[in-house]
Image 1 (cartoon, one colour):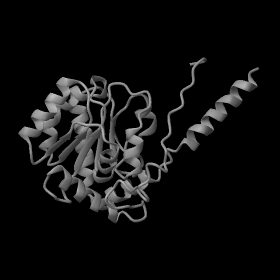
Image 2: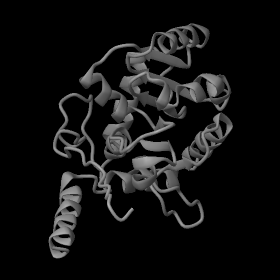
Image 3: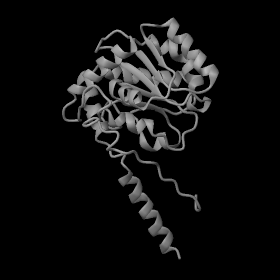
Image 4: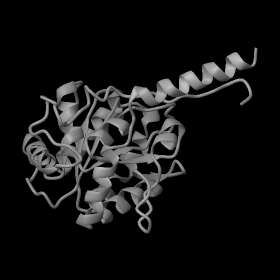
Length: 240
């Protein structure tokens, strides 16, 4: 700790900006969220899922790699679907993970849609049209998807590891503090519990809207990271 410093990445807040993003069906801001409801409806339509605004859409946009937490997802996804959610996945990767999601889509065609491809425009449609973004990584030095999903008003559910732990603080239902839902141990049932807490809050329309507006305004830009680099350079230069 005396030798190493860590600075999380930033995201391009101009490229990932729902206020002017041409890749999404309807633009929106934290002050006017009507467009997000349109994005959700269009995502459900694109995914061939029932177009129901009351059903929360849980999504993942990820490389399909083991350390991204897919063993947890595979173990518990049927139980998560019992919470009454829809699930949308975009990504490519390890063959056994791809096979699992093909099978789960066949088993739950009205709740699960899987896009096994790399598609930047589609990823934005998913970020914008989802309600909850799942990122249960076993390891994640920084992570960008949790920041991007926040930018589009989609509430992240993450494991408390690496950059996920640094950027997403657990929501407190009593104070309203926090910008997502988290779980500490690498455990499928803890992950399900975090998703369940998010789904329960989704049903409280007023609190959910307050949270989604707040996370859109969190500053994950490179300006913040650059300031930390400058502070680090100053600290180092003062030592010599």
